[in-house]
Image (tube, rainbow, N blue to C red):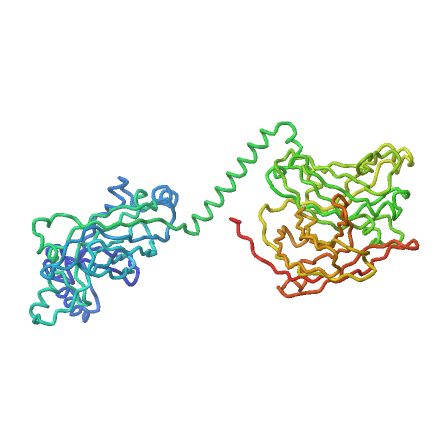
Length: 570
């Protein structure tokens, strides 16, 4: 009563009246020196007049006026963002860690059953921690989320004790304890309320701080320790802000501007080579490349005997990543009759280092030797091209044509128009560096038909992702046409267009003998067999007989496959 009665909270918004105002007069009656009950009773009696006239005293705005030394309390949004590090409303994450050195209670000589209560006086929201019984160093480790509407919100914290029942006391003793720090809900005040400086960045920095709470004037701890009545109670806590919607948009905008500045700075460092490149050519870690087909190949290179071992090799000279397509004989099989386009439909994921990476596409033949194409002791080079990944016309995600230059020995035999080379149709885009999925493949076993192999086969299964170049092999089963493996492999998948191939290879008798392809099957990533159930897949092989290309079933492969989500940390 000596300080007057103040308004705790407002259920409705008022232009003048607000929480924290001290009531001086009620309809002309002076209420200074009266308690809360007397003022409330006076307000109820004046309701019959239907007009309530209040004379109040506004509190001093110490939170803004003293800390920032500003006369105008209505700050604009830009100034508030500069002062308080964000826009309102926002959420304060307050973690109550524990208290240090609570004295014992009097006259029980036991430590209090303490808990902490956090209240936002402006919004009338209250939170409390759990009760730690009979402990001088209570630990709570609880986090509360307090919604702060404006910088003027008053957030207070208080240390309380759960009051023990004492049946031997009379009614007068219980009433006296209630007047001296007790409460009607069975709690006792241990400290006075402390306002948290949520506007101070030194407090809201997600670091542990110690708050000094003044003991309550009628606390039973002070009765036991009168000499230590001035010693504060230490409360350990830490606080941090959660970004509001406006702050998240502002940070995203600042992040984009920083990325643009960094790209501009790296492009200037690249020198003259970066002048013809797009702004995004050197800032992606992966490239998605789809080879659609090859058009305009010379007729004498279209023989099935030569195309059976002819393929296109893709190599990044900076990262030394090597990828290759399927044999062009398969492309000839699925191409339309009378068309000069060899349909490939191969998808690759190329790892990039920077904008100066050189990506080469080479047309190679490992089978029949082509005159003048080299290949002594290795594959013969038929043509080559360099992928201009800095060109917007190529990296726009649309179908484009890249001319493959034939070697001089082959071009000299062709007419001038055809000597310029063939055209490789492709679609190239920049991809993400993260791995969205992982395919788990369990190779159970397979069974081959009798006419597919000779005597004493040495078989193993190869699981490969033709788009990323990942290859996994099982152990070799010797002298068995029905081997059982039960081996599990994890295949990383970059996109749904990746080509996962299961191949059965025969090593032969000698240690230095090469693997011979017996049969293969493409595992469709959108197939229903990827449900962790055993499935039987048909192994096929390409045969060339009587001038026709045929695909023949050579066996059955038993697998079980499922998807596994890959986290960013893995």
